[in-house]
Structure formats: structure tokens, C-alpha cells
Image (cartoon, one colour):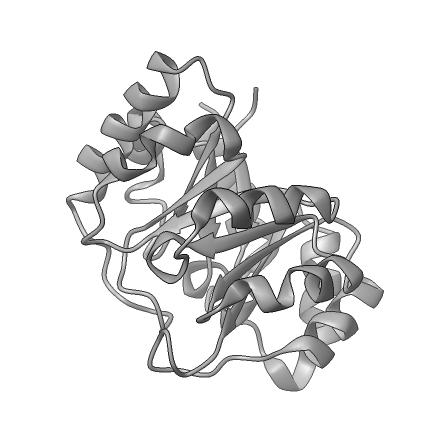
Length: 219
């Protein structure tokens, strides 16, 4: 199965959002990664439902929504209605994670769980078969453009072992500081999906950057 690239729209030019969405459509990227932040769970506010609705009108690929919000259960059906294909909630924000995962699937979406850098992957062992995607945060959530946390490689390897031991089909996604300098090592550790924000949208040629990153991940 090929390794995927998901450009993070948080790093796009919001004044030219349709242009950047069309760029991703025309690129070799696989998914759109959409970060929803509430200013409570993380110290930043990104964008909400109207912007996601606008993106969905033009997006021609999988929409991977990453909720960095408190009480995500309140909005599960809303994000399903707005076109999310994958809905990822934070382990740290869910009191009843198993129930939340079931609700996401019942709404017709794939269910993801994100882990902050300090959260141990072993905490997911009891629900790994209910999770379609684990998003390993390789920076502290809330802002783009941060430096990659080196401990991520170890976490990904540990998570890959848990998935294999439980015969699960869970994909591993890496979010934060992904570049051509660490992509290959992340894939070797067990990553399936690479989220890239600043590295793509701040590059001189985003189309070429996406193509090269995907090629590097699938060497």
C-alpha cells in the first residue's frame, strides 16, 4: 500500500484559499488535512464550519479533519454533514474515547485519534481495533511551522508494534514538522500518512514539493 501525503490547509494562503485547494486537487497529494482549533484545547483559533464548507465545495480528494477542540462529541454529526471523510479527535480531549469512536463511525466517517507529544501510544492498545487512523503529533498542537520532535520515531515504532500485535488495520499519520529531511525515516519507522503544511505551501513550487515528498515516502 502506497504511503500518502496530506497537505495541511492551515499553512495555505487564506486570502487565496480556492487557489490553494485547486493546487492540491491538481497535485499528487492524497488527502486534504484540515485543522480545526478552538482556542481552548490549543492556544490558537484556526477556522470553523463555514471555511470547511467552502473547502469541501472545491476539494476533490479525501477530507481529513483534525479536531483540536474540547468536547468534540458535540460536533461529530456537523462535520459529517460538512463532508469530512475522516474525523480525528484528541485522546486528551475525550473522556469516553470508545463511545466517541463509535459515534464517528455511525456518522459515516473513518475514526481517528490524535496523540500529543507527551501521550504514550500504549494508552490506545485497548481500542486500537476501533481506530482507523492514529495521528501522532510530532510538534505541540496549535501552531504551524514548529520544529519536529525527534522522539516521534520511537513512538511510531511502538505504535506499529501495537497495531501488528492486535492484527489491526490502523494507519499511522504524522503531523508536524514533516519535510524531505525526515519523511523517509518516518516511513521506515511505520508511518503511512505524512501531513505537510509549511513545507508545502511555503515552498517555491508546491506541486513539485508534493510530488517529491510522495516519491521519497514511497522509495
